[in-house]
Image (cartoon, rainbow, N blue to C red):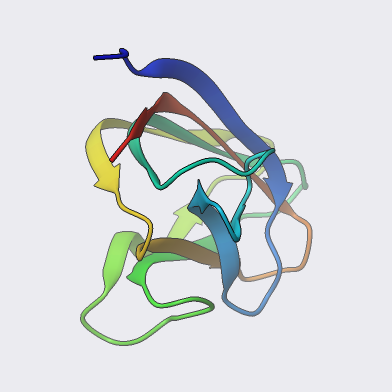
Length: 123
């Protein structure tokens, strides 16, 4: 059995509307990762949100359907404030399967940048 491969996701500038940030690649596509593969899964171990502006900006992240921001699917804060010229780190273990989309939005367009590290494996 092949082992998981280490990978970096992003950086991605967050928009003001919920958009797909990461989705595991499949034969028909994926979000935030290059290439098409057989069905895969991701294990996210670290996420960093960077605020590159001179004012605090909020962000929200969700796990669910493509482009989703439905109540009950919140992950990593709802209107979480990132201080001016600063960053927030999250450490853990989050598995995303092909049907899972990590979506996110910021309080001000392109003020926050998303970056993550983890592993990719084959389902």
